[in-house]
Length: 601
Image (cartoon, rainbow, N blue to C red):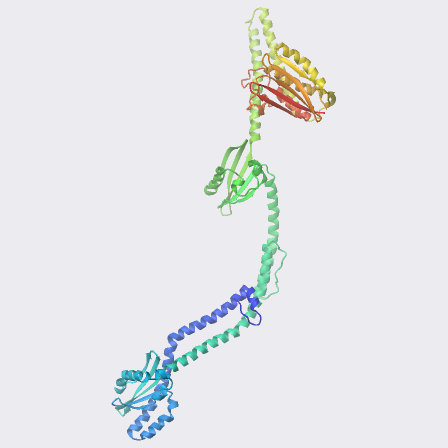
């Protein structure tokens, strides 16, 4: 809406408050005009007719007195007509005078006809006769007539009065006004009302505009301050110099801005501290509100589930079962703790409800902890204790049985005693080897000191070891093959530890390779990296056992029926780790295995 008064139309377009005030003013005036028009239509017409009747009654009485003088002989017919002619403008109405027999004796009907178009004049006399025919007998019977008779051409106002000569009725006087006079008067009155309303509108628009603008400008300035506050700019200040409520509003906004600045600063510090704490946790965290919308996650949750930056709940935790747990916590209000397997991980999940100050559930938070390593360590600890106990119990039990037999003199001949002593020595040596292996492994895992390194040739350490194990293999009926490097390589490492690794690998190869099997010891060199391999055609290792082959006390033979402590490969692995090298295995069940470790030149 736009109002063009003195160039303020553009301002009104841009100012909602000002536009509404002007709209309210114009709407009030228009409503006032409509209500006045409706009221006038309902009661104004009757009021106007009543006024006209009151105006015609004394005129009817004057005409009645004049006619009575004529009837009494005080004036002649000529004088009567002359009086009527003179006072025609005074009457300002059409006059009809009837005698006691109902005969029309005086009339200025021509004055009435002249006010109508010619095409309607022939209809006026029959209409008047019809009207007066209704009321003439009432007037001649002594009653006054005051009525408006509505015809298709408009209302005819009729006032009738009997003429009394003492107590005798000698005639009747009727005055009537045509419809156009009513229309003219009513239209004039309505036009006056409309003009007055428009005048009030024109007179009030500018004062209202000025007053409203005086109120709007401070409000606009304070609105801008409030918007800046909402956008985070709390340094903006409202004008406090205004008088009255506007000044109080400005001071209130400034106080609010100051308090918000302190509060937001404190909340920002706490939020950053909390975010850094949560983001630094290794446990995954997901928080949702009461509607199920995600409010916070930390980087660990994506690391646990291996998800990227996809939107939506399933892009963060791709498990409908877990999201159903969140819904249950929000709807029921209790904590859910569960464990589940996700790919190769074991997860411990705790989902708790979040409550607001009214103790209503406002959301839920889930804590996702990867317990794979702790479970593996716990299982390793149990296996370690179990394996150590088993490995120690076997030689100790054998020693106890042999000792009890000898103590109880159950063996009498010296040959049998020597055999028992030999078994006791063997078990003692086996127990000593187990303890030494445990001490070696413990020292390798706990000793932080650097390994002493020296320069030596790869072929030297391989040759020394191969010479010893070639004899052992031949004694067992196993083919042993050794292939040295064509061009010897000098490396900087620990000779004894490398030799120990070779011994462990060759020991295992001989132990698990059947008669007529083959053991190969060879090396390759590429880009200053030497790879030494021990390959056999033994029982091999299944794919299930391969990931654990370097664990302590792990044996392919689950019954531990084979000889050995189960610590050799664990020691080899720790040695290679301490040297900063790599060791790996390739194997197929019933086809043999190949263990390879690297040495950097």
